[in-house]
Structure formats: structure tokens, C-alpha cells
Image 1 (cartoon, each protein chain N blue to C red):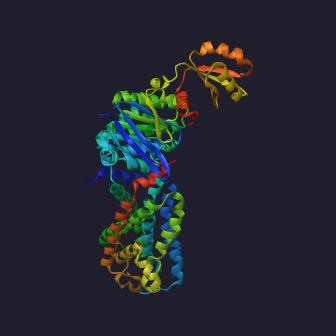
Image 2: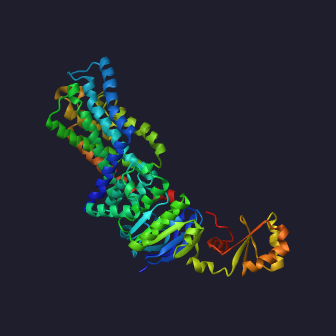
Image 3: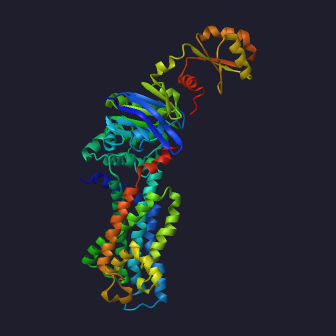
Length: 263
Length: 305
């Protein structure tokens, strides 16, 4: 039987924390606007894009991916915060399994991502990307799928990180490279072959590609999706399964508590 | 069936043996104090009993279940109040309690009832909507303990529940624990390094360097001392100690608190002491032996938290 109440309560707690941490809330809302309307508008002035798709429109799926990336990683890393401030010990001593804990964290990350993605999607019509009901439903599925995979990666990181001090390192060496090597800022097919290889192991690339499938017109050509729809879906599902399984087995109760007990 | 039984329980961290062959038995409904200086192995023991650490050797059963093989059943039967607060400071008092109920998989109806009851018992009802980060240390501690008993655990572990609190808040915490014990018949396993707190418990286990060095009621523990403890202040402790040893055939101990002497009848001894060494003594105090003297007697050192 799935322990729904514990999972639900962990998700509700994450949402409350998200809305109560003003700084996090504001930066989560402002970040995509900066990228889209400042960086995007600026670059649109210096590049010429084919097939009637503006750079701003091309950038939109990428920024959507960035929202999912930041939000998912942030949620996963809140595990480190919980460990440092003790709430994790309360959770560990409760009669729930490690898989339940990891699933709850993944659910929190995914739903928070979906919420922020939904806000951003409201702006799509403003830049000339009309959204139909079918697209909204598809994007909901795609966003959730991407968020689960990335929160899984985040949980894997969180199980290896000891303190919040390593947070900045994760931002510099994981989050930004993941974004820059995702196909969100430039089409993967235009990159040199060596960089393309890095992109192939980046789950965000497949997520953003899914968003391109749903958002950009079929005639977008070079600016359109880089991978077939089915391979995007397959890779994300596989990524999610592997990272969640790995994070669960690495979510070692003992190793994390020894530090506290030995004090 | 005993509430807690351990047999030869050992926990090693690399070269460090934190708990070294611990064998204890705690009876149901008992208020059991685990007393020892910092680093003696109290928290490690609690973590093993609460299934958070795996013993290196030996066995432990809590509420009749093995702490390793039946960790799940143990977790259902226990409540744990950690040494450092594990409250979420960004949630209100009520939300913290609600969160704990959900983790225990209580239904909404049961959770609502229990929270109301516990808030009343711990006199927190009027603070329930306060943000936890705005509560005082004493109130936060109370909330921590309240949360530990929401699911009516048969055995409640409290790791240093009163550390860092002012005397009034400490007294209050003990009153709540006492009420809890009477109303819910909970077995309480408390670690402390406050000697005076251990004095009020049913039984006390004294642990030092991971080893259990005594286990009995506070009264029995103090029975090793037949008389009174005389504490003497002086500028020349070592000289005075030697002189007293020769003169009275006693064995005084030099400690940070001055010279400690165990005598059968303190009041009768005092005039003799002053007649012989009055000029070397800066102050005298007679007291009934406390657990501090027991600890000193057992280890040859002063009890220092």
C-alpha cells in the first residue's frame, strides 16, 4: 500500500516553505523573466533566425526548461537543508520507508516545477506562441516528466552532499552546465560534435526538446526539436527510474547520522 | 515484558568505541535516567535503540522488538525527542504537529483530536498559530516534546530534554513529563547531564566512556556513602589533604570544588577538624551525598558535563 498521507504531508510542507521563503519565491518568479525578456530581447536584435521563428520564441522552451531545472534541483537540495536542521531525523525515525521519502521529495519537486512552469506558460501568447488545450495538457505531462528526472538527479546529488555550503558548487558545476548544454539557448544540431556528446547525457536536453515539440511550429526547421519525440520520452523515463532507484539506495540512514551521534 | 533490554550492546566508529558492552533493562512505565558526561555514549545508545544506528555487536529490544530485525515495529512503538530541536522553523506550532501526525499516518480525525489534547497538556493552545521561529527556547522545547508523544508511543526517548534551558523552563519540562507519565503510562528513557534531574528518576544508569558503571535507584546508589560529605576550601589543598589523612585516617579527595571528605557524622567531625586545622581552612560545607559524589567515588573524577 502506498503511504499517501506521509507523501502528501511532505509535499504540502514543501509548498508552504516555498511560499514563505520570500527570496526564493521572488527569484523563482523573476529569473525566467530576466532571461526571456532581457537576454532574449537583446539577442533577438543581433541574430537572424529562419522559418519565421524569432529567437525569443526559440528561447521560450529553453527558459521553461530552466524553470523546471532550478525548481527541481532546489527542491531536491532542500533535503540537505532538512538534514542540517534536523527535520530529516524526524522523518527517518517515523515508520516510513526510504523509497517513500525519496518519492515524496520527487513529487514535491515535480509539482513545484509544474506550478512555476504554469505561470511562465501564461506568457507564451505574448510572444506569439499560441497555446491550445491539447498543448497545455501535453506540456503538463512533459513538464512533470522532465521535473521527475531532474529531481531524481538532484536527490542523487543531495545524498552525497554533506552541508549547504556545497550548494554554490552544485549551482556552478551542475545547474549552469546543465542549462548551457541543453539545447535551450542554441539548437543542439548546430554545436560541434564533442559538445553534442555531453548533451546526450543531459536529461534537461530531452525535456527542453519535448517542450520544443509542443511549442514550436512544425516548420521551425533548424530551430525545431533535435530528437524524435519517442526517444525524448524514453530517455526521461529511464533517467527517472535510474536516479530514483540510486538515490533511494544511497539515502543511507546510518552514514548521515553518524556525524551527529559522534559529536 | 521489559520496555527496553540491551545485551552487550557495542557501537564503534572506526577506532572509537562509543558504547562498550552495555547491558540494561528498563521496566514498563519506568522513568529511567541515563546519566553521563558529554561524549559518554548516551546519544549513540539512544540512536541505536531508536533504529537510527546499527549496533556493531550485541542486541537491543525495544517494546519487545529487535532494533535491527524489526526496526519497523520499534519505530511504531517509540517517540523520540532529539537533543537539537527538529522542528521546522518555517511552520507554525500547529503545522509542525500536523506534519508529525501525517508522518505517523494518523487519520485526520485522530490527528485533530490528538493535537488538541496535546496542546492542552503542554499548555501550548494559545501559541498554536505562532511561527516556530518566533517561539522562545523553552516553548520550542515543549513543542518538540509534545510532538514526540502525539502518536501515543509506549516508550518515549528524550535526549537531553532540558539542555540549555533556564531553571524555570527546566522545572516546567519535568512537570510535563511527570503528567505525561501519569496520564499515558509512557515509559520514559531520558539522558541528562544534570545530576539534580537524575535524582528525581526511578532508576539511574551511569555511563562513562561508553561503559555502564552503575545502575540503581538514586537512593541505593547513594547508599555507598554511609555519612556526610564535607567540602573544604583552602589555599593549600594538597598539604591539608595529607595532614587530614594522617590525623583522622580518612581519605580526602582533591577536586575542583576543594577537598572532599566522607565522614560518618559530619556535625560531630566539624569541631575536631577546626580545632586541628582551623587556620588552614577558608570555608566548610556539609552535605548529604549527591550523585556527584557517587560519580566521583566510581570514577575518581568530578562529574563534569
